[in-house]
Length: 113
Image (cartoon, rainbow, N blue to C red):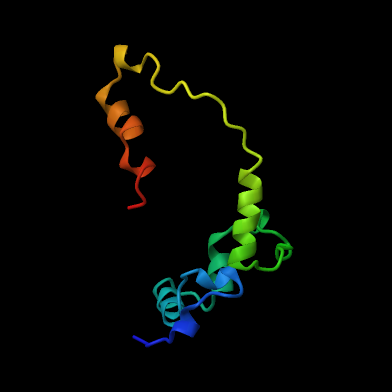
Protein backbone atom coordinates (compact mmCIF):
# COMPACT_ATOMS: atom_id res chain seq x y z
CA UNK A 1 0.00 0.00 0.00
CA UNK A 2 1.33 3.41 -0.95
CA UNK A 3 1.50 6.15 1.65
CA UNK A 4 0.07 9.35 0.21
CA UNK A 5 0.45 12.83 1.61
CA UNK A 6 -2.57 14.89 2.61
CA UNK A 7 -2.04 17.15 -0.41
CA UNK A 8 -2.08 14.12 -2.74
CA UNK A 9 -5.36 12.96 -1.24
CA UNK A 10 -7.04 16.35 -1.59
CA UNK A 11 -9.37 16.47 -4.60
CA UNK A 12 -9.11 19.90 -6.20
CA UNK A 13 -9.48 19.14 -9.88
CA UNK A 14 -11.51 16.63 -11.89
CA UNK A 15 -14.27 14.82 -10.06
CA UNK A 16 -13.58 11.81 -12.30
CA UNK A 17 -10.34 11.13 -10.40
CA UNK A 18 -12.50 9.95 -7.48
CA UNK A 19 -13.67 6.98 -9.55
CA UNK A 20 -12.30 3.77 -8.18
CA UNK A 21 -11.88 1.59 -11.21
CA UNK A 22 -9.65 -1.31 -12.09
CA UNK A 23 -5.91 -0.70 -12.15
CA UNK A 24 -3.55 -2.04 -14.82
CA UNK A 25 -2.99 -5.33 -12.94
CA UNK A 26 -6.76 -5.87 -12.55
CA UNK A 27 -7.34 -5.22 -16.24
CA UNK A 28 -4.53 -7.57 -17.23
CA UNK A 29 -5.89 -10.36 -15.00
CA UNK A 30 -9.41 -9.86 -16.35
CA UNK A 31 -8.27 -9.93 -19.98
CA UNK A 32 -6.19 -13.04 -19.33
CA UNK A 33 -9.18 -14.77 -17.72
CA UNK A 34 -11.50 -14.06 -20.65
CA UNK A 35 -8.81 -14.60 -23.31
CA UNK A 36 -8.97 -11.08 -24.75
CA UNK A 37 -6.01 -9.06 -26.01
CA UNK A 38 -7.35 -5.66 -24.93
CA UNK A 39 -10.42 -4.00 -23.50
CA UNK A 40 -11.43 -3.03 -27.03
CA UNK A 41 -11.09 -6.69 -28.05
CA UNK A 42 -13.26 -7.70 -25.08
CA UNK A 43 -15.92 -5.17 -26.08
CA UNK A 44 -15.75 -6.44 -29.66
CA UNK A 45 -16.32 -10.01 -28.44
CA UNK A 46 -19.22 -9.18 -26.13
CA UNK A 47 -21.16 -6.24 -27.60
CA UNK A 48 -22.76 -6.90 -30.98
CA UNK A 49 -21.54 -4.52 -33.68
CA UNK A 50 -25.13 -3.62 -34.55
CA UNK A 51 -25.68 -1.86 -31.23
CA UNK A 52 -22.25 -0.26 -30.84
CA UNK A 53 -21.84 3.40 -31.66
CA UNK A 54 -19.71 4.00 -34.77
CA UNK A 55 -17.58 6.56 -32.94
CA UNK A 56 -16.83 7.48 -29.30
CA UNK A 57 -19.49 9.47 -27.48
CA UNK A 58 -19.08 13.25 -27.49
CA UNK A 59 -18.98 13.79 -23.73
CA UNK A 60 -18.28 17.02 -21.92
CA UNK A 61 -14.97 17.29 -20.12
CA UNK A 62 -14.87 16.21 -16.47
CA UNK A 63 -16.08 18.69 -13.86
CA UNK A 64 -14.51 19.55 -10.54
CA UNK A 65 -16.32 18.26 -7.47
CA UNK A 66 -17.33 21.82 -6.56
CA UNK A 67 -18.86 22.41 -10.01
CA UNK A 68 -20.58 19.02 -10.04
CA UNK A 69 -22.16 19.67 -6.64
CA UNK A 70 -23.22 23.19 -7.67
CA UNK A 71 -24.88 21.77 -10.78
CA UNK A 72 -26.70 19.10 -8.77
CA UNK A 73 -27.82 21.75 -6.27
CA UNK A 74 -29.20 23.90 -9.11
CA UNK A 75 -31.15 20.89 -10.41
CA UNK A 76 -32.46 20.06 -6.94
CA UNK A 77 -33.58 23.67 -6.42
CA UNK A 78 -36.04 23.19 -9.30
CA UNK A 79 -37.92 20.52 -7.33
CA UNK A 80 -41.30 21.49 -5.92
CA UNK A 81 -42.31 20.30 -2.47
CA UNK A 82 -45.91 19.23 -2.10
CA UNK A 83 -47.75 17.86 0.89
CA UNK A 84 -46.99 14.19 1.41
CA UNK A 85 -49.80 11.78 2.16
CA UNK A 86 -47.56 8.77 2.63
CA UNK A 87 -49.03 6.56 5.34
CA UNK A 88 -52.59 7.81 5.07
CA UNK A 89 -54.73 4.67 5.28
CA UNK A 90 -51.72 2.36 5.30
CA UNK A 91 -52.49 1.04 8.79
CA UNK A 92 -55.84 -0.42 7.79
CA UNK A 93 -54.72 -2.45 4.79
CA UNK A 94 -53.42 -5.96 4.27
CA UNK A 95 -50.04 -6.07 2.57
CA UNK A 96 -48.46 -9.45 1.81
CA UNK A 97 -45.28 -9.95 3.83
CA UNK A 98 -43.14 -10.37 0.72
CA UNK A 99 -44.18 -6.86 -0.44
CA UNK A 100 -43.91 -5.41 3.05
CA UNK A 101 -40.36 -6.68 3.58
CA UNK A 102 -38.97 -6.30 0.07
CA UNK A 103 -40.54 -2.97 -0.83
CA UNK A 104 -41.70 -0.98 2.20
CA UNK A 105 -39.13 -2.23 4.71
CA UNK A 106 -36.27 -2.88 2.29
CA UNK A 107 -33.01 -1.66 3.90
CA UNK A 108 -31.80 -0.68 0.43
CA UNK A 109 -34.07 2.36 0.68
CA UNK A 110 -32.44 3.74 3.81
CA UNK A 111 -28.87 2.45 3.93
CA UNK A 112 -26.06 2.26 1.43
CA UNK A 113 -24.74 -1.05 2.61
